[in-house]
Amino acid sequence: MRIRNVVRPTAGACVIINGRNAVDIRLGELMKQRRKHLGLTKSGLAAQLALTKDDIRKYERGEIPFRADMLAVLPIALRVRVPFFIDPISGMVRKGGVVRP
Image 1 (tube, rainbow, N blue to C red):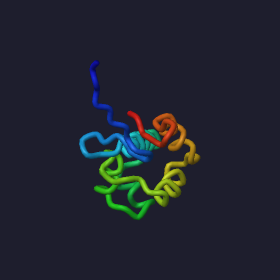
Image 2 (cartoon, one colour):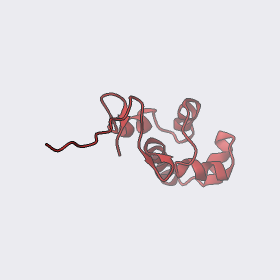
Image 3 (cartoon, helix red, strand yellow):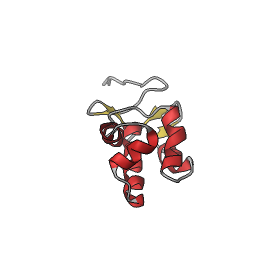
Image 4 (cartoon, rainbow, N blue to C red):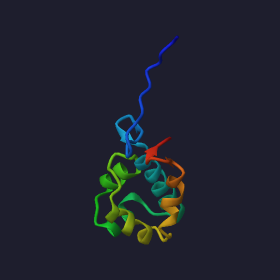
């Protein structure tokens, strides 16, 4: 009989890619895509959100975690509805709250 080691992530566990959360990476990609679609520069978006250009770069790369307050104001600045950001990541979450890439 062969025994395998099975590791089950706990609820709320998430996939980390190069030290970054997979959800933050995806949200950053969506942020960058929409910013470019609108023709906004990083500096322009930063000014609307009271952030620095470097902060925008870090969000877009998934280096800064997206908090609820950011997810509340970002759709306004990028002229989209909240589901623009939420719908694509909802598929990354499976039963038990474990994030999958």
